Image 1 (cartoon, rainbow, N blue to C red):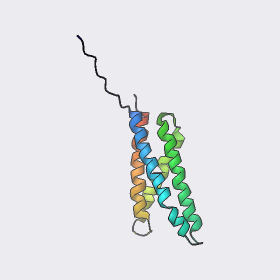
Image 2: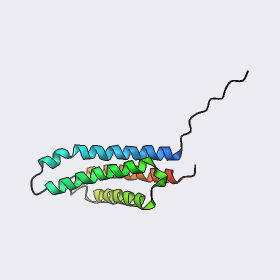
Image 3: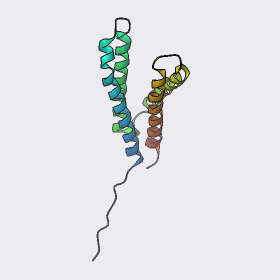
Image 4: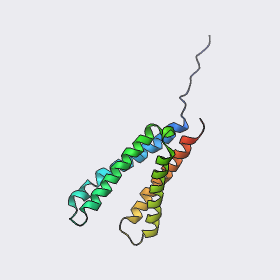
Length: 128
């Protein structure tokens, strides 16, 4: 009598890339949610900037989710725009960490997102 072979589910590079992008999605969504209080508490001088920041977090959350659904099908332009944005913000955070409020925190968060995005990009372009 022959026992049936047990097949292990195959984890693809695209699935790993998608998982990394879902982490980015969650991080951006949490940033958007956690900043609502800052928008509501902002005075007239900073209210628009705080709202702009929140809309940016929400927009990135949506873009990361769109990439996560199908990383291989996303255009190189979308990948480049997202990676370059996070890379530039990381570099600015490094440069201004000692002199601008929030720059040190942004350096770590945007740096982590840059690493995750680069890893997801490489994995999504790898051969199956």
